[in-house]
Image 1 (cartoon, helix red, strand yellow):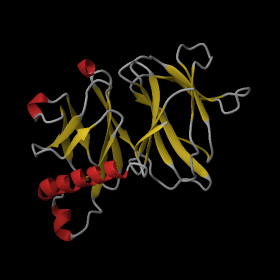
Image 2: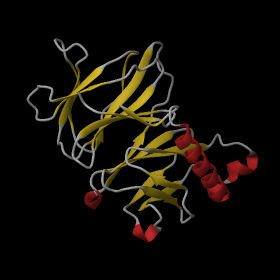
Image 3: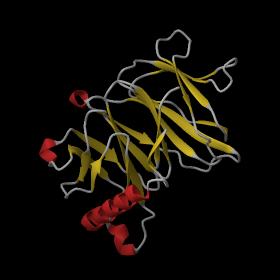
Image 4: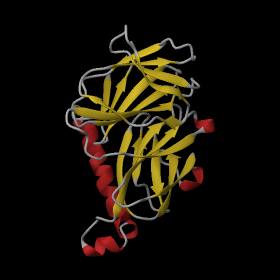
Length: 249
């Protein structure tokens, strides 16, 4: 397990904070709209970004023709939040240091007030794709955590996902989860779990990932992804934009 962005990586957090402050300074007057003048951002929404294309390299995000808002985002890294007024936007995902004319993909996103959405770029760069996911950050029931599995592993087609914490009694969580789709949210008791993936539809788990201890009230996007060597991994992204990479058993 390697924590990419979390409390154990304070230097990376400092860099991300600097990028975020610069992004706000560049774009605040154009993005906030009337709410900035009122001193309130209650009508704003949040958009966050995670880079899941294994061979895209480091990327920058450009917004509305402005200079770079977030830069140097690595594979499996979360860039943080855009705090945007309710409107339609185009976010250009470009190779690090390039301009909008070099965009790998252009992402259309409609910001809705008081909501959070996650933009995901995934698949190999020659066929790079996007997802815009609505996040459910509502209150989690006492003692539970909430998660969903998102299939962005280009080496695999449809997969079935199981809770194999008790190997003698596996519980199917998702059936025929297709590449490029997100499963529904699931709420379970806080604790440690093993997630198993059946990658060929024979109802036998082929890949198992032990999850770390998941605390109550945690909300996770769990990405099933393949790296540049076509090796499967999980990436856990929590509601604080921290990501943790997991390798299979």
